[in-house]
Length: 389
Image 1 (tube, rainbow, N blue to C red):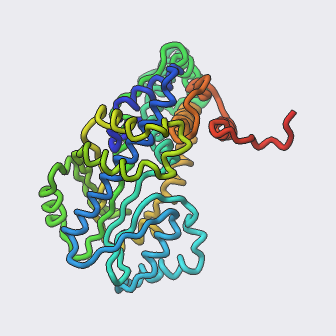
Image 2: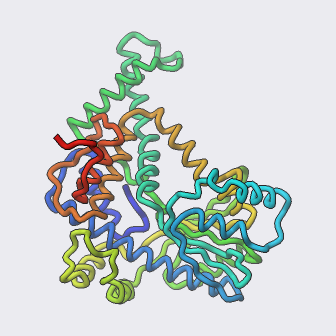
């Protein structure tokens, strides 16, 4: 798990790869807690500064900020604006208002909407949820793991007299044996996934609605920002139409420390096992030891495409659901990777600063309630058992 929005992304990847190999160090829980808590604070603070500057330079009108914590707030807002709309968009909005529950309105969200005086959205930003980070890491890893399983299956096929020159769909039992062989190999020698395979670039996400803003103006504004650079650009056409950028931002460490100093007594920093009596000193000692850059994902699109992405043909949640269905075909290893990543992040969010073992092994097999039981245990919460023998 290499999160480009985190300053200590290299350290987090090192811990992740060790956990894939079931190698726990005593100070891992506290290290993870510092990374998850302090790096996410720095990333979010930097994102909000970026959004303030971007909106001021892109839009001549007053731009208002609205926090959103659940998808219904976002979808209701964009569907209630007075902007003239095409027949298709009006039809989509009518269907949404008739049955909003059909559109995954209960999905949690951590972000901000930015809008003008007429309640028209001009931009938005968000920080990706834990579950989505784990799923995305698992999906990226699954593609890599699937190649390994296929390679081992081909070897088994040859060992048993199959003709390597004639491609045929390999029998499921050979694929299952190949996966088991790979699991045993991981148990004996560990697993280190290449950085490029598990890099997640969109933990910080921004969306800018064209609204009279041209592609060249957006790029010119970003290029003039001090410490900002466009490092990737990709144009999407078809089911979803937008321009996708990856932006790298330079972090002013002293500015981040000042922001933390004004907010370090907020509830979000309590009950995570951090040294609350010297939290500011702990943050100051930690924050300068990582990278001085973070990356964010920026989507430049139209209002119509925004509607399509929330309640239309390219709806985020529908695509996620399809990805989950597809991922099940990869077998146990990617599922275990997802469970392990979710547990690792849960350790960082919980009061626990000591664990006895890494409860998910890449070579094991687990039901979902194994993960939920272990996460509840981090918070000293009772399990779901009806009785306690």
